[in-house]
Length: 290
Ligand SMILES: Nc1nc(=O)c2c([nH]1)NC[C@@H]1CN(c3ccc(C(=O)N[C@@H](CCC(=O)O)C(=O)O)cc3)C=[N+]21
Ligand SMILES: [Mg+2]
Image 1 (cartoon, rainbow, N blue to C red):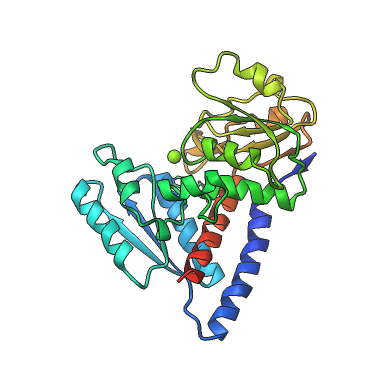
Image 2: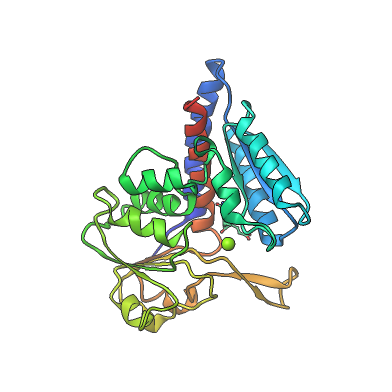
């Protein structure tokens, strides 16, 4: 059984990015600049954004954290987006999701200049991805593709099952894995809340991508012997034995399935760090595009 170590792979790729950024700096070029907008105090979002800022420091990017209170109005947030769109010093930016309930995530997304949309969430980039055109690929699915590529996981002709149909993970994952490319060329099934027999679909999967946000939902009886498991879930589960009061759990029962599978991503240290690295790659791409 192989542990797909996203943390270690992310470190390797960040070293490669840093070498490239150093070369750009030597050539007296401008260094890439990522901005992140964080609204409110959601504890998980604060961790993720902090990790993104830290990754920027590691690879030699400039980063800006734009913090706004949870009470910000929709108009004020759209003004923040407009300023970032127009700021010539910012190569790319993200608005960390989820936003507090009174804010309209879709309207915010639509206001982002596609040329600065390093999350790859705007219609322009989603459409370009779907057509196989040059674009910013969404960070989590692309991070998974990079992991499959670097670990040499064969996807061609494989049965892939994706659990979850979100715009930012499940849906783009199916597009990337089924396109005519390597990795790619897989036969992909997407399962969601209305799927009749999720377990039966899962048991057919050579590669199972779990992105549903239900802690340890995928159990050993649901996975095929020798399958490759990609666990996108990062769930906080109450655990009074930990000083933080919680532990992180994936969407997959890691301990239960690990002896049955051929490869699996751990949580933490799997998909999460790859998500961040792929955001760094998009930011470098953005700075080169200018
Ligand atoms: N506009 C936007 N873009 C995103 O890319 C985006 C987002 N909103 N909202 C939430 C999801 C989730 N996401 C993660 C980023 C880093 C880790 C990460 O660093 N994970 C570490 C540590 C996790 C921890 O300690 O809590 C790990 O898995 O090893 C995880 C998840 C980005 N997302
Ligand atoms: Mg989320």
